[in-house]
Length: 268
Image (cartoon, rainbow, N blue to C red; front, top):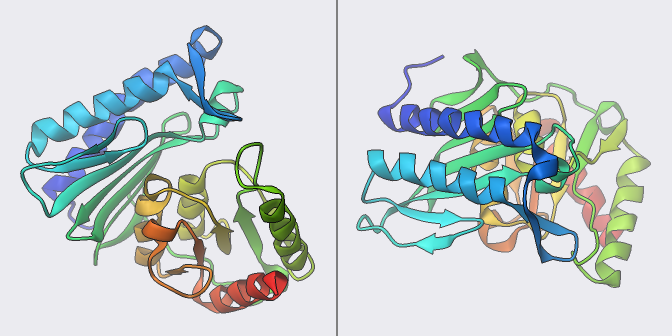
């Protein structure tokens, strides 16, 4: 891959260190303390431990940067322009059910712009990384989004509402969206980790991904991965404030527009 910056090296080192313990926790998941943040919204001792390891490692290397973290929230740094955005386990429900599809996500935001991103699947040793203007990579291999041109040949990923996530009208709206995409595509997948869904779009494994109600730590790193792999990322309505709205459509350039239009038509 292209020469990595010192900052990206710091991110990769932190992820690998946290990943060693996280793999051990996954092997002993039936012994972990599990609590609920809300209906069907789990948090484990592994989430808090992984987040603490990541914070300590990143803070040691960049002591003035701030943090936005899923479990511990916001911490203001002396450097008011830059902060780390961290999800220690994206896919906690998978984790606690013994499903080996989850990842940690780290992004660096500089004056409101994501300039570096990492999504690490520790079980399968998949390290997706990107820096602004430097491309996206998976374990040293350059990534490109899919070159498929037609919705009919395309595979899409999404997140499905669940207990406590949205009210009945939101569930009904999603069913309409899913029906519209099912009718024109090669299929839809729901794997339960938005950061990995976006990484898979960057790697050309999915042609596109859409979801609403997401948090900045779910998508910050993935947005940069997709863009640096040649893809397009917007809100469903076409805006550019994904981190604020939690609405996202990410896809290769050929199907991004048709995917977004199909979703909007389904919404009426």
